[in-house]
Image 1 (cartoon, one colour):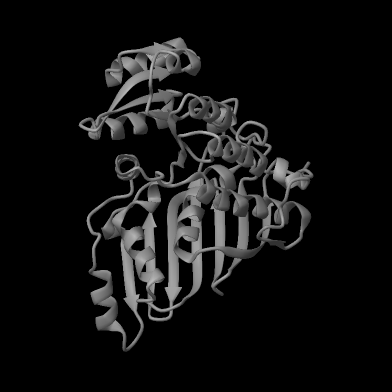
Image 2: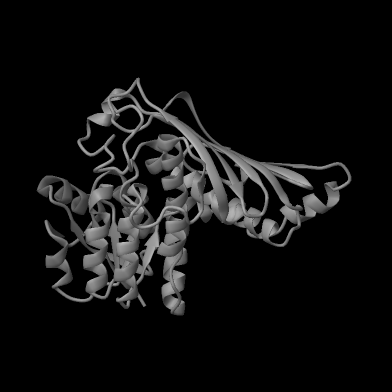
Amino acid sequence: MRRRAVVVGTGGIAQEHAKALRGLSDRVEVVAAVDVDHDRVSAFAQTWDVPRTAGDLAAVLADGPVDLVHVCTPPSAHVPLAEQALAAGANVVVEKPVALSLAETDRLLAAEAAATGSVAVVSQHRFGSGVQRLRSLVEDSSLGRPLVATCLTQWYRPDAYFQVPWRGSFALEGGGPTMGHGIHQVDVMLSVLGPWQEVGAMAARGSRPTETEEVSVATVRFAGGALASVVNSVVSVRETTTMRFDLEHASVELNHLYGYRDEDFRVTAAPGHEDDVEKAWSRAPQGVASSHTAQFRAVLDALDDGAVPPVPLREARATLELVAAVYRSAFTGEVVRRGQIQPGDPFHAAMDGTGAVWR
């Protein structure tokens, strides 16, 4: 069955969606593109051979059945558009961050529960073979118990980056690098180490024209006992994305920038465990880079099997809850525990909660 897809929002990230969907063209067809900017959506349609354009998603959904709606707009529009798509019976693939707050995410979860379709959140770094293999080895204890991890998103964004109106705003973007950049690596960390237990954090700004943080630093304790250090930055001139997992029998390191391959992993065995670690790391899967294509293929596989596509909204909420806890800890000076941020808490309604410390 060839699925019918619509892309909403035709800016930079939509190009990645279109490229990935074209690579899966035997299984999915982009039948329409939607954007409030007529020139932009027209150029997108011409580049990717999309037969129909519109300025409003409702108009496209009214035309006939749609299987997938890919939401590639700025974050403030994610939830309303996903709700429209769900109400029309479509499945949704939405970029990160899925929503501006836990409250918005819970609203979307309610809409999903009342619909026939489901919401998958773009988390493409989960789908490279290296992370998939690491996750399975942690699950079956082949490398021993996780002890400590580092999760570093040290990127660089110049002043011009923040001239786009919605960037650098809690109200429109939801936050700074903790929300919009490092969330990809945090999602991988949680998928490998499992539920987090508590977090303490700090955040700072001062050199960029933004109301959000430029840097956050957090320490996370996991339910399984591991500790992790998490750094998110948009002021790091030498950009790098670094993750390291130190387990009882091995250290696994991943160094890349915006996407990884198997070659970007380095595995070091503990003395006496060399043969077992080498054998474990040689398992399948192998040879798959992290990419939108890898995740969209998994989404289509799930739809074909009648299953919920990955990464489901409830899992994405767990990642967003840790992000909210980082902000709450950074802005209140308190350690935050999992499950603590409930409706009625200012940090449930917005990532800046009671207000950023620099206001």
